[in-house]
Image: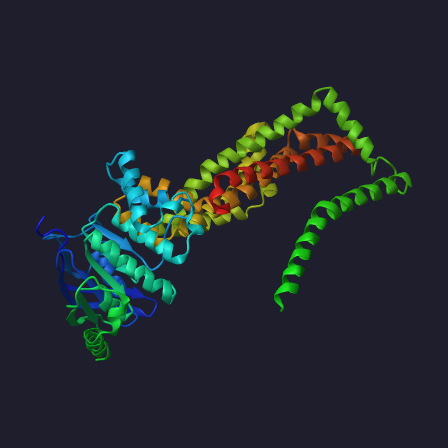
Length: 253
Length: 266
């Protein structure tokens, strides 16, 4: 398992048609995500971050350029990639445990094995007591944790998160991002997360990629060398503040 | 400080609603019935124009005891159910196609809407020429007036499926059949149930309209027969049973909805 979960984007260009005409969303985007690293992508609104994530997930084909996973070109969605969106996007007609089992229903796993994995994932998420509740009974933070668990349950090699905390209030946001770190430390994956929050990006990741306004390009690649495990208190440290200034400067350029 | 009076007024609102629904509404109904009886007994109108409620009841009782009523009710019931079944088989796939395919939707939708716009009574003559006056023509009329609400509900339900859930299903590499069963059908179910409630009620109306066009049995045939013999109690009775039948159809679908959409009450 040497190169599991290495995701490479090479020279991606993408444009799409909108009401206002043709929009150049991405321009020559290239990067390589190492195995089991946590990377955040920050950039101004509308810079093509979500488009880039959909391309990386294999949901959209770029106009030119390519994405490869473990060295082979990605031209359709794969189970090796887990997805989390800004909204939890749970199925309201399924209970919590049925929601988290959903991805497993398309694998060849036996019913008992599906159930076993779902139970242990709910335990990891701290949602066991809600197993038979419907999503309408969950708070926003619980629902988003469930969505993260659902993305992890089939053990993907890459996890793509599109502003996963964007719909949460500030306190819940901090709590769920710490939870994500805890879960990630137990299920190491290659993670790429889109976020608007510079602090969140630095707190969570090994590396921060900064995008320019549209058409999106990677304008800065900042390595976050803060020791792990990290906590919210680290935000007060001088190293943290230095990195924050560095990212902010790149965004303003 | 403002919280307490607000809570109190909310409780009193609830009480008022309860009183209205379970006490005043039945009283209103009984009052109207009493008014009806009073008008009849005052003999403002001859009884063959406005019959006494008890005359209607007696007339139905006689028909019931002879087994005639049951036969006509069953005929209308069968027409409505068969027509509705055809409607479901036709409208759901059609709605799905229109919702999922831009091309077919652009091609078909104008014609579907045009067909919907034809008043069924205007083509009554054609229906009789083509299908005769047996059950086929009634099933046609029922299907003709019930398919559109169902199709519309299907289109809206399938079009409103969360696009991110669709993305996820693609990422799970679900096949189209799995996407249908695990995502589209349950997601569209609230819309389908609303459409079915409308169509189920219309099904009884459709059966009656079909019988009015030309029939030898069924509840609306009793109405036509009653018109010919100036039998107002028979007409009133048949109208009453049609109404009850229509409500029963609605009730069955509402019960089905309650069961199928149990998750919405959780």
